[in-house]
Every structure is written in structure tokens, then in C-alpha cells.
Length: 129
Image 1 (spheres, rainbow, N blue to C red):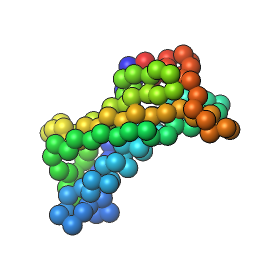
Image 2: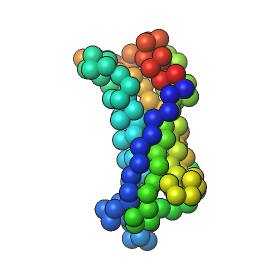
Image 3: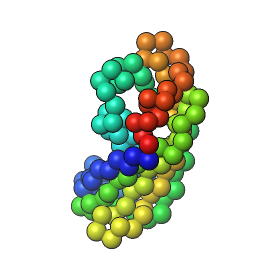
Image 4: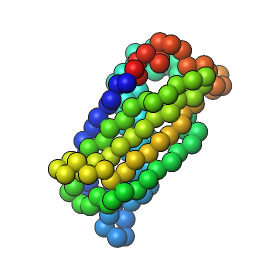
């Protein structure tokens, strides 16, 4: 399985009223790293011909991140079958390597032109192995 990783420093715009990273921001980061992984691993033609849409999202909050914390995001695809793919995202405090968020999302592949579900090809599966 191909693991894709990013690092981010928490800024004031990421915080909620409790001065922790807002839950909505974590959800955005889950979406952002999935897109970044897709764009880094695939060809321009694959990106042009395909669109991923989120079908379901489960997130577990283990700890809070605060202003100026450096966080490390990891993602990988655990399963692809038919028109759907399951992706895990783990977010750690970079210095301590403490898991703060774990997310499992299910994505559906669409044909970019018709916007209809499209079977995930072996070529796309291989990109994420």
C-alpha cells in the first residue's frame, strides 16, 4: 500500500472557541490529503477523466491539537472494489507522534464527463498499492 504524507502547522484560523483545532478543519484536512494523494499519484489524464466523491466519513478524535502544533498527516487506501474505495487518514502530533485523529472514508469514483459511478480499474488500484 502506498502511504502519502503531509505536514501542517496549526494556525489561528484552524482553531475553535476552545483554542483547539476545530473538528470541521480536521474533516477538511482529510479531504485535502485525499485529493493531494490522488494528484501526486496519478497522471493528468487519470485526473481529467475521473472524479472522486465522498460517500461516507467516520472520524475518531483522540486528542486536541493547538496553535503552532506541527501535525503529521498520513493516508493510504485500504480497499478498492467496484466503484468505491476505502481510505484511512491518521493525524499525529509531529513531535510526540501521538495519534490525535483517525478517519476512515469511503469514496466513489465518477466519470468526469457523465458524473456517473465508474468501476475502479486495475490501473487505478495499482497506483495505490
